[in-house]
Image (tube, rainbow, N blue to C red; front, side, top):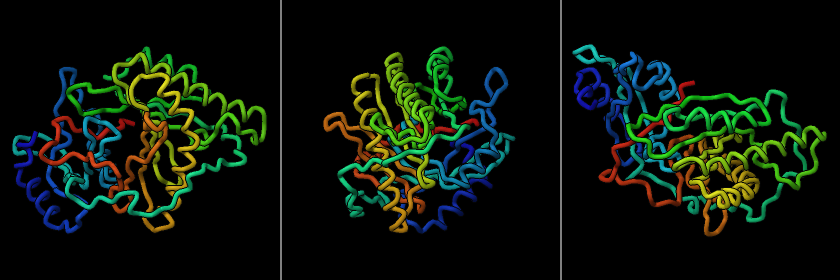
Length: 326
């Protein structure tokens, strides 16, 4: 699709944005095509999303560019996008992409945030609202409907199904995104100060359901479960990789402490006037501890202690945006 970037209007638009960029956040800025009006044999868009909705989403909240739609492997951002038509009448979305490699990357230890090593759990938790729900997002090409029905039919609250579209020609892994209330992540079996017995049962129901979901991951080929929530307007994600049930149970048992520490990290970043809009945690199997993999600040700078951000010359052919069709 790169030949579409030779369309004069698109080429001039991309060059104009690149020339104006003076920030050192990204090591390299390039143009790309992220959508076309190409259709499959059934007459549907290959990437089935309304182009104007995609453009609005990108230009409002820059999307993270992932390696093989792995939420733990960010390599850049889609900075800006616009719709064009080629001389042959092909509609497409051109985008300006910034790559982290070679740019301004901060490390968590540089920030001197002085996080408490001892986890202080909240002494009490409120009852969850009556309209509490679970957001369950998958790409139907990766996760079959039968498995999806099994794990969502036993949830303690209503489930909203969200269809993802990973613009990838090859299924590398089965990515499952589950949105939960942040209070659910903080709760642990020793929490007793909840207003009512019914409220306690709801929290316990979430805990039981999440463990069952982790058990069901063993039926998948190469699953990645991303449990997501929001804290102080920052999206927080905790990644469970693979289908080792015991390992995932260990990670789950440590999740409340990690959620408390994530909230502290978000607060301290905000107090430094460098608020984060995304924060992702991974579980280290050797130490049996969660650690912050990376954060995206509101000013687009990435913070990470991981030196595995892919160099430009090593970029794979399968890149994705993790688009939500809802």
